[in-house]
Length: 380
Image (cartoon, rainbow, N blue to C red; front, side):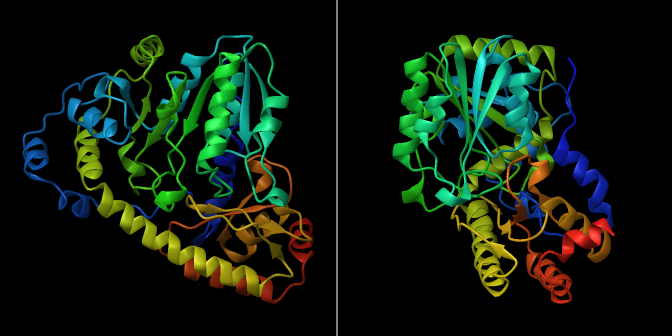
């Protein structure tokens, strides 16, 4: 298997070490271990205190699978397979859905894992990007226009990273209907789900039929990326068999401590998501004010979900601007060229508690320049 360069992670490795201020992160501020342990109930306290470090169950701890199933009406614990992080879950979900020569369609912009993996497993891929001009709205007709008789997988990230867009319930149902009409599977990456207003949330993927799959984990909205716990939920028994065989060939089982801590987190879901929602909501308001004050530099199609925003630079090349901000001003942002997506956008994260200081540093960097000069500084 030959893997392509991972543009975003390469960018992070290259530039984040320069920077005092990271305002591009896509996760919520990490939760302290002591704080998570304080949320244990009697059962999880006993589990933690008696924990041994042997092999865990390949499909996930039974209590963890049961907690995940409770998030998805109509799915039981048998529908849940737990993996060593959402990255492995996505890799398993895509690999189980596609064969070499199949066709896949990905709704972008999206994390390169989603847009790149179908090609890695030998499929042909078309990407249909949301656009800021349309408010990042999901256009199911555009997705359908690139589908083919051999299309076997549609991929959607909802809420979306990097845009923060959230499709409506009607749009997601229409996409699921399109997949079903093609005899294809719909994979919905929901790792940012839980911070939106409940009345705006579309149905979870697995609720849309046996051809639809949910992928998620505790890394983003829960602030628990260090646990490396993700999952796939499917009501299709044959598809789950392929997931299981994939697991046997890869990591086999998860970290036993991480699984117990994930049970604690899911049982305290309301507390953790309230914490995350408070951080993200305050930061979104702060960013709105910042962008309004710097309207000669940026425009933005506001979004109300997830942990990221994707404003557009009006006169600068995003990559060169991001290089200048990192190397000369200590401010880390992610340019659209490494997402990758069209246009001159910067990804800004809303989940970290130090975003106010980071935006102050960004404002200081812009104060001595005129629009267009960030790119020139990088080229100099």
